[in-house]
Image (cartoon, rainbow, N blue to C red; front, side, top):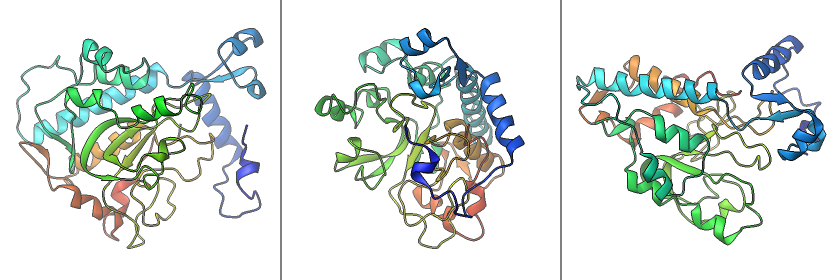
Length: 301
């Protein structure tokens, strides 16, 4: 299994070293939240745990992860509706029904539970240029063909799942999806749930925002760990070096918290269709005045 020693020069002063008490506190939080659980060796092997990590097994997501994400999603939807003076017609409406999820062959997991329980709305745009999906769009997932074309390479993996859509397309390689998903010449832009590359212990609540515009040309845009973005379609909110867990992308709840903050602060304006301004608003993430508005907590663990 890759370690930090395999990937980074540990003598590099630019690495995000943490105090021991910070690291231990993070691990305690993970244990208390059941993000990692200790199992007997036989059970560990039966659940396909990584041998070198006995007795610990990393959970793809926890009930706490799901609950936090659903709560933040609901707050975001309600905040947009309140500012737009939209009266809710049905507090029980959800993004997708169980029958639709089954028809779309969405496997059980974080994406399935999120869609099944997340509050729906009459608004259209949940962020600038980024819209709520139509039910039929869940059926047409852009990476589904890859799982059929590369069955051995994708065995046990969670394919990137397109959750929210926006106009535009880029190549999967430019969007920085990993092989074999990177072989697609074109994928829709939007917010993906992207657990890859952790095939054995995927973090299913990790996400990737793919925009049809490159950020970083002005040298103000930053990743979530404050490293410069270098003309990228998909590095906003990403974590270049996670100091606590190898290869853990930004948590969806962290991105939603950031969007909620931008709505509540008035940085993003709204109208009857939801957040207004279109995709051009994202260019503010690469400006001296507003780059900091596209940072957030809750991105790492």
